[in-house]
Image (cartoon, rainbow, N blue to C red; front, side, top):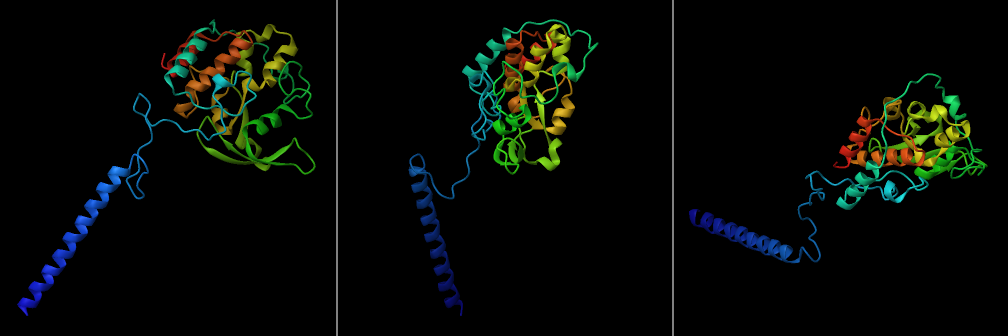
Length: 271
């Protein structure tokens, strides 16, 4: 009985040694071919890192960098990560002028026209038969559904919200889950100089796609009329792009920002 047991142990040992040899050989072959073909079942690789060591943000393939979207007609707000883009962002923000925030006296949303207008001259998509809100939902949304008989009124869509990084399955029956954010808030505009504009120009900044981003409703509510020094998108990866867009609106409409806001904008882009 003992002899039989010994032979069985040797057989099992031999089979284990053989299996190990085959495994070592397979791993060696995998390592040799990895750069060319990859190996199925190999350990997953970490996401590429930025210079800070944090995982690089991913894009949904739909959103566009604000540096490549100067009129706001292209969809979304893609992160800025490359050193050249970050340097370009800082240069752009650096040209924004500053001043103190004026009084809010006399501000009313109606001073910027009713929401949402299709009759404002001088902005993209004006007079196209579709109001500004639906123009923005069509710009940034995907998998769009429309009201029966309409090619304007969006009733459902998928939104990759840049502010939170969430994907929102939106329907018109729960409309406030997505709100249209004025990047440079209208009351902020009023305090920084728009109080002295003709009403037509105020209507332009209120309906200009450059100043408008569909976003998570609660995040937009938390922002209220804050500048970048007191509110930034919850998703840190988008904060430089958001700062660039804020600067683009400021420059287009020749509205200054506060010194604290400008410093915060520069900081988000590595300045």
